[in-house]
Amino acid sequence: MEINFPYAPGTPGADFANNGGKYWRNLTPANKALLDEMHQWVKAENINLSDLCTHYLHGSLLLLRYLRANTFNTKKAKKHIEKTIEWRKTQNIPELMKQSPEEILGCKMADIVDNFPHWHYGYDRSGRPILFKQQGEFDVKAIKRICGGSFDRVIRYHVWEQELINRVCYEQSLKSKTIIETLMVVWDVKGMQMSTLSSDFRSLMSSMIKMDQDYYPETLGKIMIVNAPSVFPMIWGVIKPWLDAVTAAKVSIKGSEYKAMLIESLGMENVPANYGGTKAPLTHDIHPYAQAMEVVYNVIPESLSGHHPAVPKAPKPPVVEDPGLAEDFDHLKVSTGGSEAGSRQESVDGEAVAAEGSDVPQTVFSGATATAADASGSSAAPPVATGGYKQREFIY
Image (cartoon, rainbow, N blue to C red):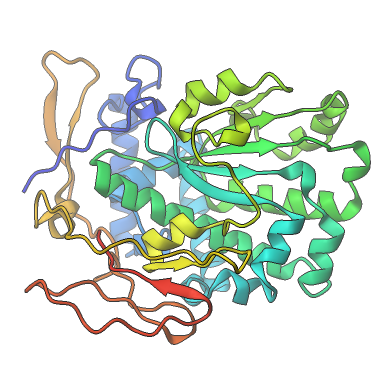
């Protein structure tokens, strides 16, 4: 089977006229040659790209992320890939992703949200995951205290977040049949002051930003900073040097007049009511990653209030447009050349989408498991929910 996944509308990859020939489907001849060189290197060095990224659509798309991050300098891109693989081994990503966020942080998620409200909450117009972070309410001293007196657990949780959202992008791509490899971030800085920039704040934030840029390149779509107070230009003067030039260019800053920016980028229906949209408002009762964990782990976390636990969705049969999609996606076939007229199709050498069976998680927190229905349509007896999570039928 041949699959032609375009980039999601509204993303740089879909903008043939302005993306500089740096994205699949309209690579310049020179950049195509550099991508071929990277593929040859991967093959010669016997590099397993699953060690570089657990869930990716195709090797060419993954390698292009590292080429773009290194201005198509193959020598730098190769070193970047080797460094990332070594780092991922030290992090033991597979074991990390078997843990719940509460296990990683060593505290109740409600305590985290009370001191740092943040959520994955829906998708933008292009289908990219949206992260809302109320940075102005971030109490770095309290977070450090409840996480054991250091930021080690917080950093581990951030790695878990990045891996989770990467998987969500992968699932969204399969669901929408478009290439989705970046996310949107809404950073609410209401209430931030210069005093917010304590040594602990600077240490934690600069470490996380550096980690994102070093080990998750080309995964950020845009950061929209809202509710910027009058003192924010000085705050931004401290934060901006932590960002590379490419990342800094993806940042837009607004004060209280931010509604139009959010609606334009996200769509009215994807903006929470407390930010001027029509989506249900964000509250401290919502688990930060309830939606993502439903997609990835086949569980729905209970609400953080403890009074209104999330209820599993009513089971429904999966919509299967092509039963061979998961198996044959390694045969991704996309067009090259920027013009509509005369565009040609070019096959990409087949590569595994991910580890065998990775599209159906077999291990969920604290021994709970979730298994999709077998080929006959029947499913195993539902496991007992543990750790405050509800099980639901996996539908992807």
